[in-house]
Image 1 (cartoon, rainbow over the protein chains, first blue to last red):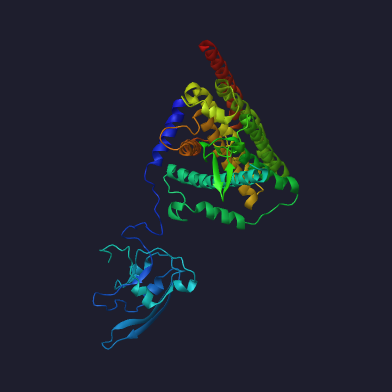
Image 2: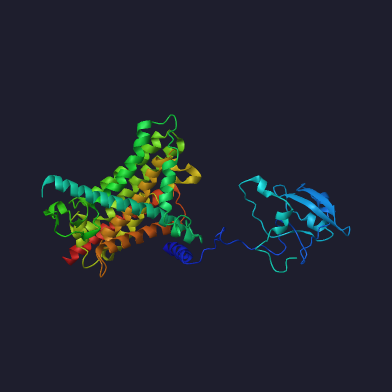
Length: 143
Length: 342
């Protein structure tokens, strides 16, 4: 009758000296798997040029109507590029359909997952914020 | 020494001890949360201050700013009185528990006036070395029931009332083995004064002569403090929070203070009666006392992290059919051995 009780006590005492499994969240973040679908991001080429040609396929396919606005513009050699690109992250469901639909691989879901903001307006991303976001968690072979 | 000086010095001593004691209680709460966290492979509180050391302060501030709500239909006088009774009766036993032999020199001079500190034992490491010390502790322990029972009754709530009833039944049942388990110690020392009991253990701790007594005492103390595995009174899956259900803010905090105070007092009492109190080699006495006490507090928390709760019939069975006969046997055997040696 006493032995199982002592065994239980021994187990809990052993746990006291075992390293906790807690992840100290704001300081350490849980790494995500390589194909994780996080925030949408506009990808640029190595030379800094945009891949997006403002075809609006992503806007058409977006099931939650998160891609709000794509304003097309035309360059000197008749190349198309977006003059404005707005994604409402409060609506985005991170389904990745835009990524699948994109013929130029210009929109990708990166591996950022934090959405908390003090103002909702902060989550409506314009083109600069969609492009300039530098995901720190991203793997080297992300693209 | 004249009377006003005596009163002032005594008040200073009481205040100092009370402040240290209250701080110890606050940090026992932190210790419990930390140890339970470690047992469950967590860190416990570690956000407020280094290693969460300022957590008790944050808790206190939070509790002070909570709304102090008194529900309608309660008996207001008793509702307010109950937490006060619990806290006060939990504090008072510490007055007779010796934590060191002598903490101050026999006399000291202050602006040319010499005070004789041997008066009323001012230089001793105990508030009051009264010759019925142990009886006083148990008396206060019995009074502690009133806090919970009155709180449960005054709340005008079924859960509270049932919690209070359970507590009353549990306290009455376990006070018997608790009282009987220390009879062996009393037979060995022949005194109720806790200082005398500690001094009698200078050659050998009483846990060696009274191992069964110590075990019974500790189990009964667990029940008296209403700690796991005997925490049926605040069994949340049946009774919400037992007699504390309707309490909030500082009134609730007083109940919690009482609970943790009970743990420290029970541990200190077990240290005094069975583990040689302040006595130990090399280190100063106060370290030995605090170390042993907090070792036992750790055991309290360790038990909470390990054992599930008893059913109420099991609780009564353990109290009346196991602990009570065992403590009687302990007294008989102790008496027989003492007689044989004599």
